[in-house]
Length: 449
Image (cartoon, rainbow, N blue to C red):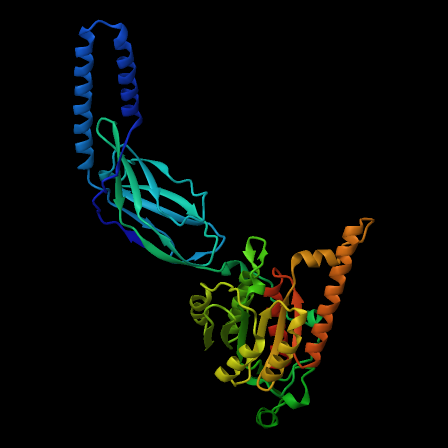
């Protein structure tokens, strides 16, 4: 995105004294002190020099105010990724610059390491360029302000502020580029939930093409009419069904607002939801999303095609967790009203023991129409604590014991949900994107969708 510069009249407070003028004033003040020990004739000379200095400074100020604003523009990407540095280029017409000028870009204030303000030296080329890097710390739209230049006056007595209008708004998306390199392997997905991976069935798969019989093909795959015509065994080849639906229910309540590294639990959940949707779109399925218990509940109907990820990104990039409690049964009723066609419904949240009754009601309602997968986010600290040996420290032993009780309660909750007909997986935020995709591919390959 480019902010085109337009000239703006400097405001009344756009001048500041330069170091040279401050040095002259200091020297003039020292001379005033010295007048007590000098003859009276020097007083006249002192006043004359002072008046001359004042006139020269005022003339230099008048000339500095009349300097035109530079012709400048800012160039930056049309969209940014959170926690990733992005180059921002400022291009200024060399003809409108003095030898040196100080540049301050009014970029968002969440990155203090841009290196601005900086001194810009006029280049011999037609354009003088300065590139700095901005790293956004939060998703959502960010505001870039104007380009601010401090020009030196002709006699270097003043610095005048010149402003180029370059205000613009840029969206900051999740760092989806990292997620696209996550490993997607369905061959070992059954290890994540204890579900046995069934072989592909002839039923429930879409016909793809006819081909020559290969040893190991089942008799049900043989097309006997084609075999009679060709007088050789011909098999039907099937592919995974397409045009299926994946719906992500994203918990926007306060329980995912906890910090996990440089992001929040909600950021990790959103990353997992987007990667799952991206994988489904690549499989030619439909992907949709729903935010519940947030400040602004959002529903994105299922879309299809490789461009569908842009629709989902634009609909989800500015979401943040609220301070509301999570209401699973209400979210389930809303989802069923909006979509009754069978889909894989993936509920991404952090389960708590008191959620049991609400979750059982939600699962019972969703299972009438959909296949339900619940993704429980585990805190990395708890995952490390569960593997930590108990030493001689009594406080540490109490902490490990309390965590073991919580983990057992969580395991019991998972068991109850599985008995109710839901698939349940629990993993850390960093592993959740790849794990959900592996499970989706496993379910698709097994024909359960």
